[in-house]
Image 1 (tube, one colour):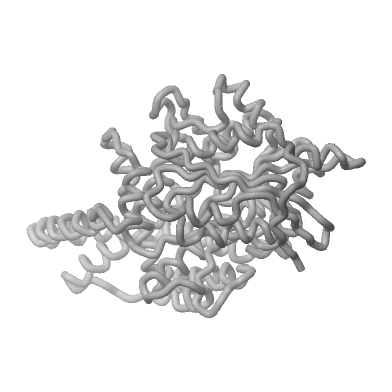
Image 2 (cartoon, helix red, strand yellow):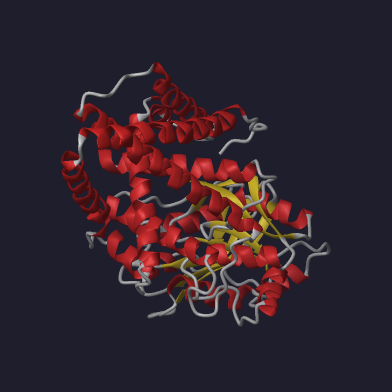
Length: 470
């Protein structure tokens, strides 16, 4: 049970409260970069004030906003006395409207860092992330237990209860499954977190200072990357610290409820990851293709490439075989989808807050398959944008998409229709002998790749989860 009271009149210098304690405890400064978060900012602040271990100070850094974020956040500004199971605690909420900020979230994070750099830990919280009541307590306990830890991330999911509409619920369920797979993969890798997501992670300020010194930076986060959290995670790891994921701390993040918003977010993430893997793509930021934290990224990209190849090749060869009456059904083709269903269902069962939609998503295969095709479109868009060398502000494009603007997410579908039409035309012009040769070569290749992919899924299916819940 947590009780929160606004109090007035205690020491002007908040640090004096901590100086009076006889036993040293760690200090945590929380930074919330917020951009047009009027729908969620109040709940985010309340969840922090409702923690069993309340941050010692909370700074809401509002930037480039055009809604009521500042007004709503300001209702919580001021000192608070919080009584929890851990005892009486004090915190203070500050709201900073920094106006137009060309560096967007990175600029807001660095502004916040200057306000809490004297604390032991910086807790970064997105303006749409609501944490479980013990999240900060769990993160602090592990961070203080090992000085080698540079940062710890919570386990992320999406609360789908407020989501309305069939499409929005479907996309949210897909994202929940995607988060679950990513979190579980990191938990099973010795809880080594590839990306300390900005949604809800705690950073050692000592580690951040070492990162700044080692990389000759004036701030922890740099604007040279569109995945600022991934880049900082790499730098923390390179500085000799551990980047971990907590098995206990949990937080619900804001999900994307439209195709265009999901496309913009996923393309930004994937594009940014490619830049980190490829040397010298933006400013002076060096690519680090062999960095330990990027192994997961390489694996993700290879898996997506294989997923695309198998699906596209199978459908193409199936249509081609049917067109000349050469298709022969084999029950062996039922094994891959059966293993996929088992794997998706087991993944759903590992989710801490699973619901019936998560289970149906895995059991019926069709929703998961549709979502995989959507992810494939994001993958194609990201690599196409990267290889085109076209300078694009992916942050701005995501903001535009979340406001309902832009139609770029339809580009892969339009291209797919054009490619299919061209392939059909070419296929119909080929002699029967050539068509048969193509099928004779194509099916074995698809078969071998499918077998390897099925074996990979099977090993994931039988792998022990050691009791982890995501």
